[in-house]
Amino acid sequence: MKPVWVIDDDKSIRWVFEKALTRENIDYRSFASAQDALDEMDSSLPQVVVSDIRMPGPSGLELLQRIKVHHPDVPVIVMTAYSDLESAVAAFQGGAFEYLAKPFDVNHAVELIRRAIDESSRQATSAEDASATPEILGQAPSMQEVFRAIGRLSQSHVTVLITGESGTGKELVARALHRHSPRSTRPFIAINTAAIPRDLLESELFGHERGAFTGAQTMRRGRFEQAEGGTLFLDEIGDMPAELQTRLLRVLSDGHFYRVGGHQPIRANVRVIAATHQNLNQRVREGLFREDLYHRLNVIRLRLPPLRERREDIPLLVRFFLQKSARELGVDAKRLSEAALRHLAAQEFPGNVRQLENLCHWLTVMAPGITVEQADLPPEMREQAPASVEQNWQHALEREVDAAFGRGEQGVIDQLQRDFERALILRALAHTGGRRIEAATLLGLGRNTLTRKIQELGLEDRSDPA
Image (cartoon, rainbow, N blue to C red; front, side, top):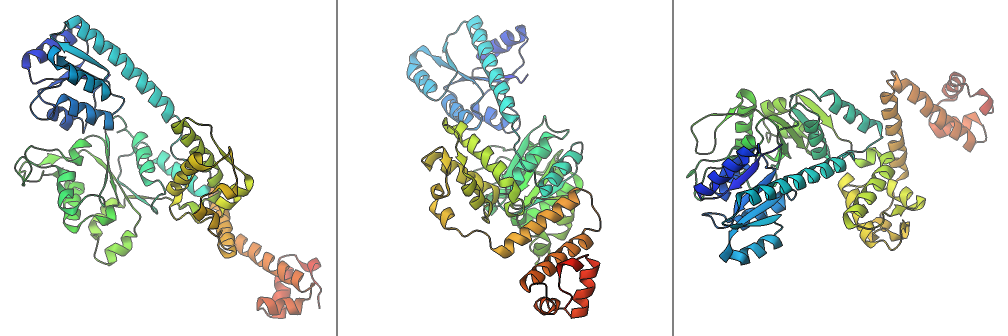
């Protein structure tokens, strides 16, 4: 079980809690300020927090607010003086589990902590039940290959590069790789390198020492330290500035780094998973990405297919997202009519799975009935033309190829070429009433070539020999 955190600038209060919790065999950690606790929360979490309100630096109410935003399931007990009941009210409004008035009875304090521990355990059980629902769904052969790769990598610490268009679920795959790895009990830390200003990204990744730059009033640990023993997910790695590519390469090469303004090397026991929607080969050729870093990251590559390449998964995903939205909003789950589902399955979905999820949430809120018809779709989706005939047959061919590969078949091109030629010849013969000369002209073949192919494909009875 995770420890109870006691936060108070009064050393005597911390001592009382330490003695009482030791007597009750409850693991604990003590902090003299809310800032110290917040810094530690980057890499580990408590079972319960017991915090004073008035302290130097961030107050207990600020700490409570931060915890409720980022870790809402962690119960927080706030301590306050009798003369500070307004703060106690504010604490309850901020989501505190309970407040403890000073001076307090130690046995009462321990009883509150035990109640909070029980509440935290129930929350954790509920979270485990919710996590039993798979985060990544897909029956398409291309997605099954991704699942197999996650399974093969389950006992590995190897660096992985995930590629795929925006919205295909790259972070979900990274989290699955972490959850099924030997590092699963340690932190998973994600950072989008494209979302952080260039001048802040170095400090965000590697941390900084106090006084390293203007505004650096305290030492701060970066994402590499926060992920110690676990997994660091670097999203949109293709947008990383060149100077940070050099620092990242050094970490991956020798396993050490320095905080900004620091002189002491820090060992990085971290598995790196990177992701990008960009073509890193092209960026290497353009001089925008270091080739040596690319090879360091590209140990194992997983490509996530766009939604248009796995259209058979759209009905499955729609059902899942509609049920998920209904649970979140506390309403009955909606369902799509066959016509509406067929229309959706023909769309291109440039935003991929994320766009489909947003659509399902919109339908849960805005569609008038339980059964969603095509006319109930958002205007831009109703008016969006389905994929062209050319795209449809190409997608069907791609699905057939994926299925054949998934079945372990070999020599696929020969079989598909025979099927392709058979279909073309049969349609040409049907169009000409079986007349081979006219069919050969339509196909751009010589008559003798067409006759030979008809014999090879066993189609003699489908045509007029003339």
